[in-house]
Amino acid sequence: MIRAAAVAVIALGVLSGCSQPLTVDAYVTEASRAADAYVTESQNLSYDYQSTLEADVRRIAEEGGEGAIEEATNLVSRETIAYLAVLSDAMRRYADDLDDLDAPSAVADAHDAHVAAVEAVLFTIPATRDAVESAGDIAGIQLALTSSGFADGQARWTITCSALEQAVRDQGTGLDLRCTRQDRQP
Image (tube, rainbow, N blue to C red; front, top):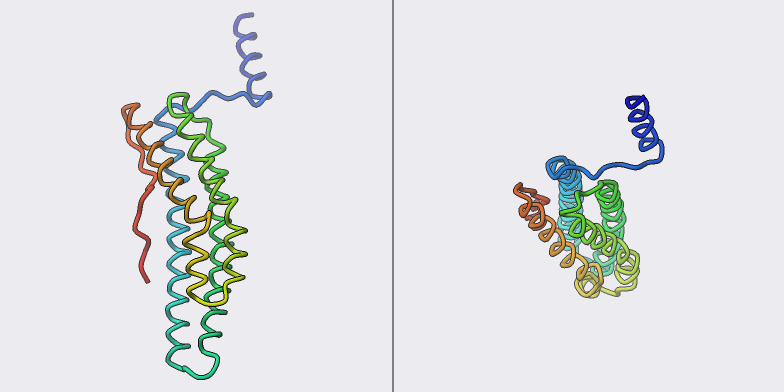
């Protein structure tokens, strides 16, 4: 009878969607997996974006001619908008992967703050794309990027990411979410 009751309680928990928080070690494994996937994808996207811009702008400059500056501006605008769109998709997957984790209570606040920071960056991308699209020249595009909520959000992302790593270290194990990293250079 006791065994049947235990099975019923377990089944009820499974059916109702109740789950136990992950252990710190299991959390580290899953959070690391999510971060590694995001960092790899975002680095590749950044590398492709930078490579394309450098090669195409160099080509436009070498060809010179009337309208070269306008052509380069249109190219940078178009490629930046496309980059922000695919980067947004990668961030969405990362945020969803993290949000799906049932963090251990000892790191839950830091986990939630980091997920919120990623979500906040995602929220700024449409306005950043609009600002890039409205810019009249390459300097305006750079200003749109550096003065955007996207740039500010990146700083918050790094702070909350580092705080999450520290919260996990405080539990006696390490976590490397690659909060600060060097992107691949073209």
